[in-house]
Image (cartoon, rainbow, N blue to C red; front, side, top):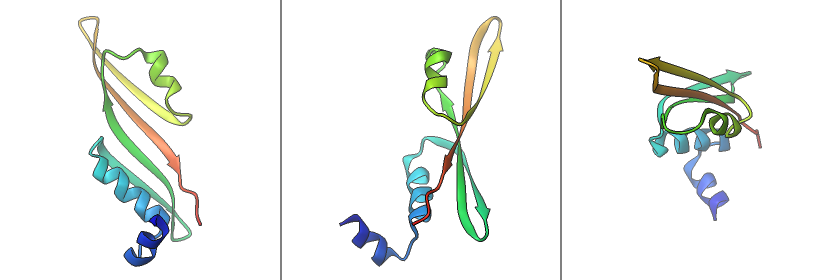
Length: 89
């Protein structure tokens, strides 16, 4: 049934992935990288719970950048940019 939705919407699978990320409302920003006129990679910036262990954060994605801000010896903000390679169909 999902393929049927894609056919009727006129959207490519990569465009659907971008929209799903937008609708999840998890991300502060989303960056779409285009190669040869097609979506190649999607990067999402999200704020993480500062109570989570850093080792656990590192295990969640294979490709990511973590930014950790500390004030008075305590972690006050953790931002993550993770990259998702888009599979063309």
